[in-house]
Image (cartoon, rainbow, N blue to C red; front, top):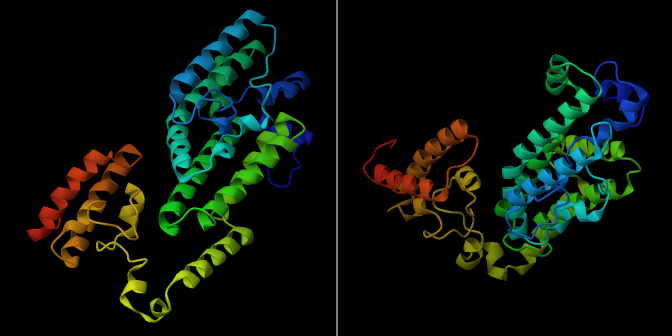
Length: 335
């Protein structure tokens, strides 16, 4: 896509299957799922905290039934209301809790959406008399399938980064850097959706925005300005002695005694102002033992992430934490 204008004939041809006709080119951007509208059907109209996966399954079944009723010769766009603001899932997020719900349910429904997208692609190409070998090759190496998979990956990374930013930087929500970061990306993605003239514009502009955002670590000058304002507000809120090292000021943002921020991030546990009840590692008899126990637990969690692609359930890592504390107290380096 580098050096090509969105809507250019050469770009469209490079994204489609070999020997794509002009009629197919007009249908090319109708088959993919709207990955930014997940979770819940294709418009994210399910209730917050609801059973998004079941909602999505029913929507897919309904879509198949409607397509079958129209006959094989009829072409049906995947989502006629794609540019509606009601399909802007991130736009529904107002609180850190709502962001957690969206991120969790997006991760659990993305693979289902991609599988459904693959089914629609195969049906569309069979209608245009492509062989199964050609379909399989395009599905793996074709331009638009690659773009859609990358879009889902970038969007998932954005949601994950937003969650980590809330845990790492902000003790408050209103007026915080994390809120400014969310509001910025929410506004820009909504603008792309509502201002796009065609679905092609929406899909490719969204992909380009997310790709460039990932390269910039999801920040820019406007978002950085919000961080400066938050830091200034935090300094102004400290008592006079807090800025010269008195106990109250120093402990306002005191880090956990395990001193392992990476561990807190992967387990989604607050790093600052963390009580022992929130971080089992902090229950060690000394700071030195807590740091050792944190390293032991981090190694165990990293192994689980490499094997399973995600952090272990809370009940699992809490059990490991207890063993790590016991191991550290006994002078051992692993469990």
